[in-house]
Every structure is written in structure tokens, then in C-alpha cells.
Image (cartoon, rainbow, N blue to C red; front, side, top):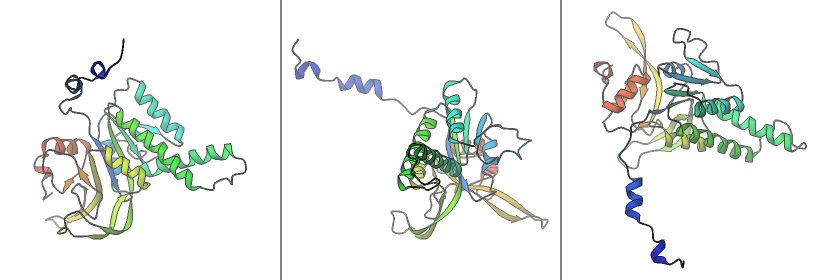
Length: 267
């Protein structure tokens, strides 16, 4: 048979019919970052059926919440946890990578160790520029693999201050000379920001009550801002921040646009 243009032309209507679909519901992916002791691990424990990948022993004090924890001390631990989640019937709704700052460092050390084994003339412990690139690709591969799992993902990171001139596209928006971002290498942070549905900054405020008591309130900042690396995908107009943030409250806010009276701006 002679192959001609006529009998090799694709039927794009059939291709479109097999490809085009309506949006489907899936578990939320969340990046929560903030300074030390602002509730990042606590936020992860609220996710219900969650497996927390813990490189910092940050879950040790959550005896009452009693989450399932997979301790991570090396890149191999992280890879084993991913293999388990991708192959086993585990019953988890969420996986939490509680310490992206540490995981990035683990990837770098893993790459350095491999290179030192291959090259005996290399100075041990000396980081080379190409190590950062290889570690970054290793982390990106893990992130895309986690994103493909049929579970929600929660990523946490420390906060880092960067200097520069930050503004939105609109000239009427105020500029900022500093910005607070998740403490990860820029390439990895870009990937995380692109795959998650919510980027929230965890912080605390001190409030004085009517009886003169002063209490600490936890909040998650969600609104886009030149000062913070934050934002959310939602069909609704969300408040600037979520008071008393938990995973169920955040999911309800994103999916329904409200979380009841406790989710008001005044809280």
C-alpha cells in the first residue's frame, strides 16, 4: 500500500473528543511556609489521613494528634517513601513533605556523595556549581512524581527574606524592596509554586481580649502581594487570610468560598 497524505491525515475531531474533558475534583496541593515555630507541622497534622515525611523530628511533640510519620534522614528514605505511596494501597488522603528546605539539602548531599565516589581526586565536602543543577533536577523529578500521585500534597518550608524591587504588573500597586519567600533554591521554588493550588504564609498575631488577656492567634496569609509569595486557585474571591488555619478549613474555603463565621476577616 502506498502511503499518501490523504490516508495519513489525522481526524482531529476524534482526537479532541477523546482528550477534552471537564475539570475534575482532586485533593488540594498546598505550600505552607513561615518562620520557625509558626505552626507548619501542626498544620500538616490537621489533614486527617496524612503521612508526614519528617526530616527534622518536628512531629515528636504532637503525641495527642498522633500522625503517621515517616522519618527521613537521607535521600534514599525519601525515595522509599515515594515508592511506597506509588505502589501500595496505603489509605492516605495526603502526604506532607514537612521540610522542603531540608529535603533540598539532602538532594545536594546525595549528588555530592555520588560525584565524590566517581572522582577520587575531588575534594570531599566541596560543593561545585554543577552539583546545584543536578540536585535541582533530582528534586524537580520528585515533585512531579508526588504531584502525579492520587493524594493531596502538603509542602512546608522555612521563610527567607530576599531584597530587590517587587511589584505587580499594575503601576498603581505599591512596590516592595524586600519579599518573604519559601526558603528553597529558586528553580525548585518555581516548580513547587506551579504545581500547588495554594501558597500560604503562616504567621501569628497577638490580640488583646475584652478581659485584658493577650492571646496568640495563628493565621495563613493567602492574598497576592508584592511582599509575600502567596496566592490560591479558587472560583471564589477569598479573604486576605485564613484565621486558625487547618487543612479542612482551607479546603472548604477554596472549594466553597467561606468557612462559616469563624472564617471572617474580623477573626
